[in-house]
Length: 124
Image (cartoon, rainbow, N blue to C red; front, side):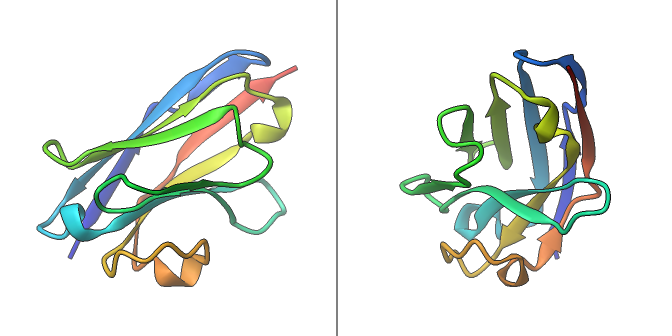
């Protein structure tokens, strides 16, 4: 079992930055691919970014590429999402997720464990 707890969300003006954190408990963090997804009101949950277990590979949605950076600290069982040049369309609930198989799929179905989400609101 893996418990994921996100933090770092909030209200920011367009052009600003936020850093999301996701603290994981359990023994599988170091072998899990970690992902970030987001869900805006009335929309489906969308892929944002992922990072493989050793951090050797990252992947980003086109909409955030060049603005967001995912990283992880395996010693602290934590994954981060640095979000820069935020836009109003980035407003959503952001979810951290873990794929204990360590795959690199963007499909949410591969991620077995999910956090409760943290709200990010970007004002114009």
